[in-house]
Image (cartoon, rainbow, N blue to C red; front, side, top):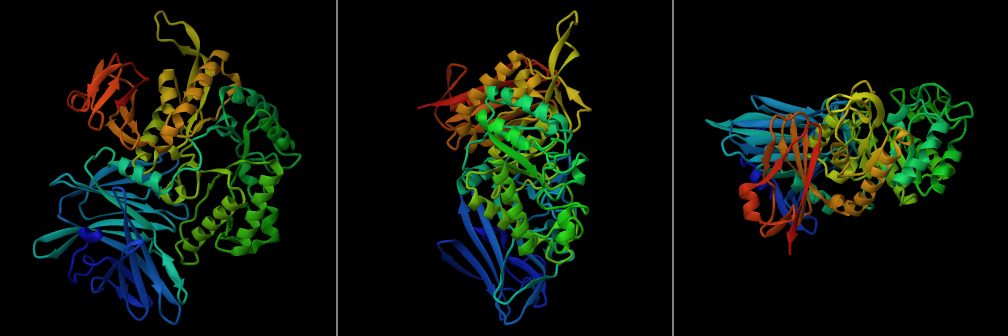
Length: 624
């Protein structure tokens, strides 16, 4: 399994499975490993009188999973300064793919030449703050790509650097693990530290990194408890300027269209001030923005047949909050609730349960809108993230049917480690047709489609010209194309409907103001999507075309019996394009015509009559 990435010998910084450093000394290329097998997989172990290093490796479909552990086997506490898993790739001609990640720039990926070293890491406590935990290296001599996906459980780092082994032989060394800057993690006697899990595989496709292999493995290893739901959220309608009457006015339209879960986002709590100034006590006040009417709204939501939800930011509290003065010991570095502290964690767990029980919640959205770069305890936030996991696990145990979505200023916590805890992700505030589609396209390279929420953010305007000549003024749906409504677009409804397909489908706008015929269109579309969402809950995704003005996705089941192609356009300067789907051997039905897999691979599917800002959807069904 992992042997292909291991070089024998004792060449410092290149050979060996691990690098570790601490009060016990340094473990590098001189470490000798023992290989054993058991029900968990293949175990590679190094042991001396103080430490034990283990790598547990197993196959999950096309994926190699590697879980490393650092164990203190001495009779005294040890301090860990660095601990990384190591992988070696022969050769000297590589390019590297990484992703920058920031608000309104989520999952912004690109390739670059590997000249000396490329390092990616989380900027702080949030696991995707500054970068996402994916690293791919393409060997320019043979085109093969090695893809590394990390499951963060602490502040992390991934590096790829060129190294001369000996003579003229060069290699690229990849190391993954905790961020070592400032790390001095005390490991108790007998304690076992879990390093970030790594999933790696080899790919051929430079466009999407053969991400379908990752999707297949993840949905197999961590199957969804629920199908992707239909959601409503108040945030991008009015931000925190919430109004009870306006929210109540959305409920009937949401129920009519087929929404299943209805949420009030930030602004439901505290006094009538900016929501960010009221974070922490999580109490609804009579002089708040909703005037004490949250229960009234929740009752109407449930009466309309939907589940009710609220937004929280459990990991922080402003300095003026009551809990800060009552229990300052619960907080660290100012506003951060110390999840590593059991009493602090017990407090926020009880407060969350109180809110869930008081308002009859079945839907929560967790957010995390601030950050800190360094863990003052020297743990790279490992203890903190253990506490966060314990908090979510406790909620899951108490409320097994509670649906929890994760947000952190958009996608600053959208990773495979968090995906094991949460049901889906609010991946960005930038949910518009152009930018939103680009972010989805890049996020699919590291995340199954059913985890990525898609949100409709539209209003109706009567001052946009229609496409016919002469140019009459008509009332058209206008989509927000950033996070703040100061960049808007009009796209064809086909684009909007297709963009919303593939994961949880949500609305975050004034749907009560939609014209009746437009609500009816959504009602019909949502009814059909509910029939299809079992397919999307386990579907793999491929990016067949990744162009400036044209993007083509293929969603498919594991055996490629059903394939759905989405052909998105912005501005196009051609009337046709041939796209080559990925299919299995056999015959397919396409546009009512039987076609063999060989024919589809050789001649593709021709998309005709292309229009700007639209989407053509075609389906292939295998004939049994």
